[in-house]
Length: 109
Image (tube, rainbow, N blue to C red; front, side, top):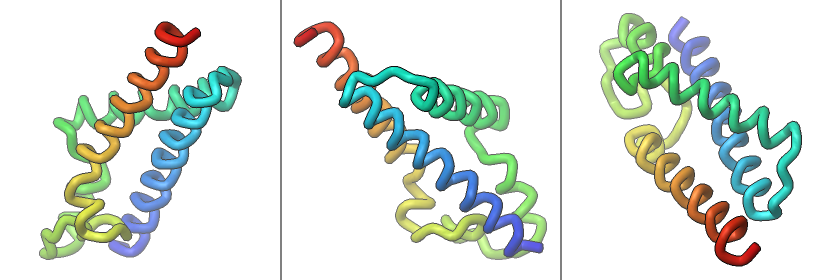
């Protein structure tokens, strides 16, 4: 069962990482289309889910009941460093995307 939770968590992570990349691409190219709004919607939804769960993925407590392992990546198939600093990494990327958008849209229109 833990394997299924880890697979699901990893799948969700890849979807969110892809959404972040698509947002970066759209902002960099200044192409605002349905794909951009879908990616943005997914990222907002993920942020709300994390916010209402005290910044913990809802799959983490479920996985913690299935193992005594508490390493950073006990509930996901990611390298430990990425699992440990995931929120910080993607927060910086999201801030960078916002800054690129401000620069491209308002400073050099």
